[in-house]
Length: 179
Image 1 (tube, one colour):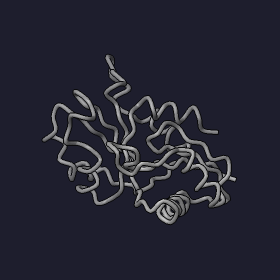
Image 2 (tube, one colour):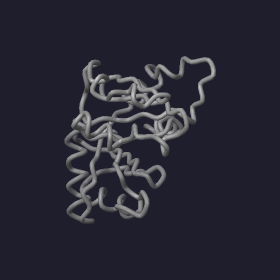
Image 3 (cartoon, rainbow, N blue to C red):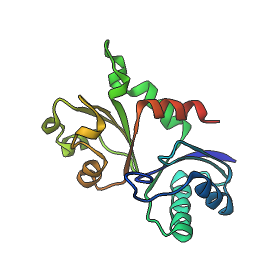
C-alpha cells in the first residue's frame, strides 16, 4: 500500500463545487481506497492504494467524484517527497525576514523546465515573486493570495496544465500528517 495526497482544485470555494468531507470520504472508500483522511474543507485528501502511480490515483478520484457527485474536479496527486522538497527548495524560506503567511505553493500536474518561468511573465506581477521547481511553483505574495492576478487560473492558462495552490501553513501541516 502506498499513501497518496490528492489535492482537489476548486472545491468549497464561494459556494461552488460544494462537497462535504464526509461524503468525499465515503465516495473514495467505496471506490476501494483505504485509510481515507481529509484535512480542512479545501480538498486535501490522503488515500492508501495498491496503485503506485499518483496520476492513476488522481484519475480514479476525478472519475469517482464525477460519477457519484456530478462534479468536474481537477486533481493533482503528490507524494511525501514532494512536500519534503517544498521545505528544502523553497527559496523564500532562506530570506532573513521571511513572512510565511505570504508564502504559497502551486502544485502542478506536470513537471516544468526552468525556462517555463519566462512563460509566466512574473515581472508584470511585481512585487509578487515566483520560482519554479519541477512540478511546483513557490510564490511569495506581497499582499496576499486574494489580491493578485498571479493565481491558479493564470498559471493554468499560461502553462497549459492543472494547478492548485496551498498556503504555506497548509503545506507544512500536510507534511506532518503524512504517514
